[in-house]
Image (cartoon, rainbow, N blue to C red; front, side):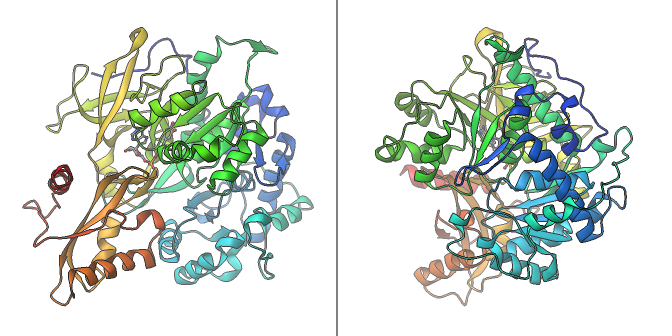
Length: 576
Ligand code: 4UV
């Protein structure tokens, strides 16, 4: 039984497959709302600095010219992977125009989480084959360490423009070129030749290489094509048109007054595609904040009269727990709260609704491997707990563990989806590609049911996770990565890492460890193991769920860790 979006949705516009994302986003002929022309797509929430729509077009062009000269690249020379740049930065208004500049050259952007340690960043630089790294002053020392470990020369490390307020008094050090300088140099360089892409080229070429562990194993480079991002942007737009069509029109266009908050990390697919592409395409002004700080975030909502919040459940919980702070700010401009990346608890949703009765809560579900959104709730059609209806262009199936296709509503199984936004696959990983992708279909590793909703709509509910992934504050933590790391510690003979629920973060990792003969007391070993993770891994991967010792890790005859068993044991222990 293939579940489809209802016929009530606007049809999906044709998806161009012969242009880069930069062209789609910046050339008016590809359907951006006319509002987009008069709006500043990206505004810094700390300084108020903004690029107008026109200035963004120029900046992308100048970046592309400057970068081409700097790195000796040309739009039609080499494959896209000959032109991969790593990005390791806090959020900045500089980022997306810079990404589009790389796309204008036919290159690939591989964004890394700004919380990464040098070792984690080194892994991504090497795995992605990045030829240059763009970072920012606050992260420069980590970036330099990673670059040295990866063998990337220091003169291939560049600085992005970030607000002085987050530089802690540091100045841009000499000896590093900045994006500002590259764009400035680009102004006086000759125009670039056009990208001479034929039909289908945009569907074959990778634009972003984001990292996801998929259903198992280590983080993998997800090859997101130009067409994938364009497709999801158009899918989101078509879905939104459904409800906007019933709203008053301004200049013949559906009224559009969204000012959204760009607070989530731009390295993650949610912020990258939903906020920074679909948003500006339909005319949103995105107010970018470098990182989450409650007061700064609340002040930005008040100052910029933010209408749409794009958040993950832990930030919503944080807001609810900090009502004494939140109530000091005027948040009355907010009309919609979008949530995704992890399940929104029913209680949290109801509490939020009580405190902010005028805000419509909407939930989206998606993955890096689907260039983000698969389903979303509509305003006025919100069924709490539901991840909404499938977007135009999505087909979905539910498969039982026995490989049977579910043929009725309300029957759980693994959600398998097909969509023009399903990515090209994992870089250099045939095994994972075979396990995950087939004929355009993608195994999500999520357990779901489809239920009939109001007005005969079909709603998808994500009920559990089959894959190994742990989601901490909406960010991915791969158990296999932590297990491999723990095994390098002398106190650890064997181990498994599992997710345990956490009120604030959603989930946190917990290690189940078989102690080695040389390990000291339990207390010492726990401290040493936790420290081993803290010293080498980003904060969201720390073992906040603790460490438990066992005599042996339960495994299947083929050696696979029986994670569900461990998780059930953990549940049982908590129940007691
Ligand atoms: O690959 P990733 O880190 O991707 C994301 C994407 C977040 C999205 C997607 C659509 C939106 O509209 C939006 O607002 C945010 O997080 O992780 C993918 C996994 O995250 C879990 C699920 O296990 C995916 O396989 N996940 C994502 N969204 C939800 C979710 C959700 N609404 N409910 C439950 N789990």
